[in-house]
Every structure is written in C-alpha cells, then in structure tokens.
Length: 158
View (cartoon, helix red, strand yellow):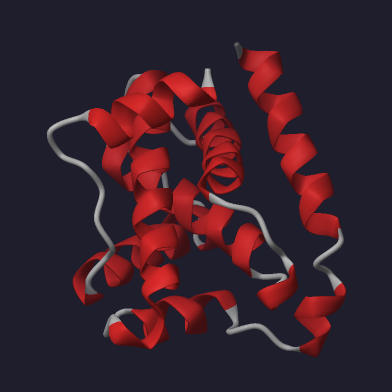
C-alpha cells in the first residue's frame, strides 16, 4: 500500500519538491489549528499538511540519531492522516486524498530537511520540530516504535 502511494506521489505530474517558507508556514499553521486548537477541516490539503507536520515532528524530533528515510516518514504521515480522517474530517474529504496529500507534504518536508541551510525554509521547519537537542536525542530509540505503531494503524484501516 505504501509503495503504491509513494509511486503515485513521486510518479505524478506534480512531483513533490522541497518546501518554501510559505509552505512551511502553511503546514505549521494547519498543524497548530488541527492538533493544537482542535479545529475541524474538510480540506484534504489542510488535513494532509497537518498530518505530515505531525509525522515530521515524530520523525525528526529524535535529532540526528532518528534515522530512516522517506518510506518511514511516509508511513508515519499515512498513520496520522488516517487518524485525522476518522477524528477531524468535518466535511467529508476522501480518505485516499488525505493520505495522498499527507505523503506528498511529508516528502516536501523531508526534502527541505535534506537541503539543510541551503533552503531558506529549513530554519523555520527545524524550529517547529525543536531543532534537535540532547533531550530529543534520548528519544531517538522510540522512533522505531512509533513507526511500528504507524504500520499497525495502516494495517488496521487497509
């Protein structure tokens, strides 16, 4: 399932590229509204970007020791998207659209992180995550466990 979605996202005409400052601001805003303020949304893009930011925080929050690649991050994003589909989808966006948007946004965020300081949006993205510090590095071992939880969620819904 993950491979199909990744193939569709990466093979489509609108291949993800790294995020610019406005996209990081948008994803951060949606994350804050949906997760922080518990606002509802019917937009697959709103829900997908919020899910991707949540997944990225889980993925990158462990600092440099967290490891993993796009498949791992995409799996986390899919898990978060499915949670939002069931709990926050006020207007009825399609599950497949939310998941696809979440994976696409997750790859954008991943590519931004990979570019590092050469991308002006990198600083804002990493400040959202916390930038990585000793306390976050201590939680790096739990990232694999979170990935397994995401896989369990995916298997439950599909």
